[in-house]
Image (cartoon, one colour):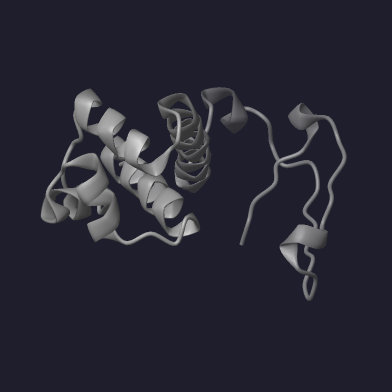
Length: 126
């Protein structure tokens, strides 16, 4: 499960670290307790829009830039999650028998390319 608060915390931490600033410096500038800012960065607390605004001001980063980076991270996390999820086999796949069976050994999977109409080939990963 993708948690937005974790992605947001990761982006905030990276922004702070890029500037070479400590939690103490940013928490003081943002007028937020050090412990609470730490929990936000670790994705343990949901930050309100007011708190995010104060942190962004302290980091001298526009909130839109922060959210853009969070959006990019979210898109990558969603892609990774969907790639890891097993895809359901469509009912029509059971109707098509395997035309040929090919065994390839000793070749890394990323080096194998199969070009054929999708309805004519069943590819089974071993």
